[in-house]
Image (cartoon, rainbow, N blue to C red; front, side, top):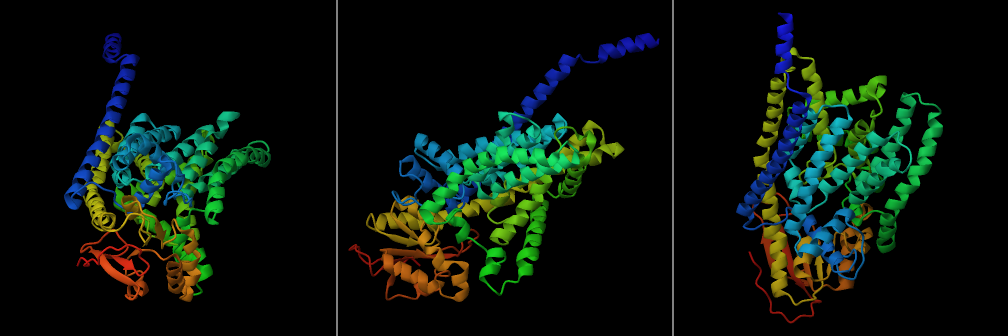
Length: 563
């Protein structure tokens, strides 16, 4: 009788090849489903924006800045906003280069950028999958984590933004994956993580923190693993990797310094916040406790709050997953793929950002500055959730885990309608203000007129006219005139006005709320057009005005301002 039961069990057990075929089929279907899911979300967002804005467009004026740089690169003008006038790189120079290649092939920037970002987002999900496997997780959890990344906000917003978040996210996580997998490698393959970390830094300056953290991780892990002569090994690694990293990122700094006198992209200096180290140095009213403790602590806390809003089911498991990674790094059974780089990055990036640039809410502009951290939050949340279910008998069954994964995906999907609404309103506001003004200037102002503008992207792209950037992004000469110290002294408005008067633009296009002193000078600036947004959720102010200046050389008739 026992022999018959064994024979029956053997007959009912599928052969090993059948398991492999089923696994491959599930893998294939899962990735096709992921791509279709992301495609459906993008279509939903685009439909919502078309309904609100009346046309397809970009959600921020910053996307138009990338488009303008990409357009000039594709036409052979180099990194310039005004053709033939070299200026600082964008905050994502590698993305601008990639977009320019696409623009050169297609002659179009909006859907070209969407297509490139779509591919990058699928690659990001694939890297999350591979990273989960590298951390010792099973294929089921790895695929589930990739699916949750695909359906969690604000990935769809990033894909449609015309900007760099998907690019720097995929490079950052790919660098982490390679670092974890090749930390003990030798030869040329050991340099792959450093190469990718450098590319991530060129894709987004905040990612420059990855390389020093990775080198610190090498040292800490050598000490924890009690390897022979850990300091000597680490010093040897540093001597090999540091020159490679510097060689790859130094051209960006050298180019910026040669063209603008600043090492970093000018956008960094233009957007510095008060509550940070630079603000404390310039403004005595900013307490050092705010700059060094309160601001960074608030930034980190708000990052966690933002993640809880993205998917409330993952925030508690995230901390469990974080703790598991730290425990794993200290465990001798962890194997070759143990690392503390992810825990280091999750804490260091928000804290350093608040210190060197000043506190800014993490959900600002749909979390575009968290693109590398959000997938790590999801991955650690899924790992922490798996750890929990393994210790709860009733949830160990595959069917129970599948239900839990479905519930996590459902919670992520429930956030999509509000996120699509935000995207649609972003496109609406940018289209109704900057794009509308750009078209009006193109149709009513003589070609070649010099424009002094505080939002340069869409206006510069559409008009193809030279601009003076009053924020300093592409006109670095104005940066010191409106830096933190001058604003605290109260001399910035006078210095900015003198700069405008020296350059004698034909038209002035500003937010009067920002530049109220210029708006009052009706002896110099005649109002000819304006746009007011009744429900502004995107732009720095609800009202933007166009003025014809006394220096205008055109003979255009006086225009009646639009109410």
